[in-house]
Length: 214
Image (cartoon, rainbow, N blue to C red; front, top):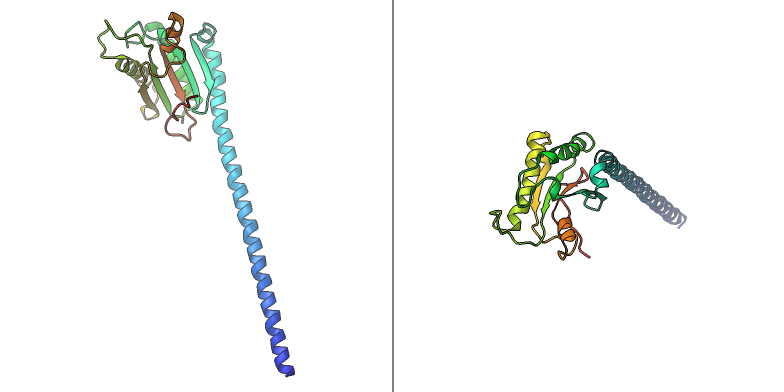
């Protein structure tokens, strides 16, 4: 009887030790997972801060080099959830109804290209063309879709051919009259809607996020 009791006591002790070890192993594993998760979060935050700082540096440089255009309200810089958006009135680059870049507009694009190549060399760049609602009458385009797309493509070709921006970074969209920033009810508002937008994406992204409508 005594031997039996000793045997049972030994089993209980071994079971307790085993359970304790299992609990300790689980605790160690949980601690290790917490450390790994915290490290991953830290790395992600560091990457995000680095990308944000790249765009912030680009914004500061563009504010400096595009001072005249910004001061004349012909250009605007905005940091959005899509990235850094540079908005130019179309009149800087194009005559009415045309898609050939004006001689006076090329130095402006060159300033942007220098920032693209120097400050954000890994970022994708989306070029968007926009028009007002005035229908095409004399310029020969089928619609404002074609005009806005052709203007965006002209800017892309300038970046690639003249400013040596890598073509793998570039894309275009033509939105015609369908993404206005103002009502097309006055001459001034229509002027605002005729624009070219250059979107510099954080370098971790591959495409433009769609604009969020209110």
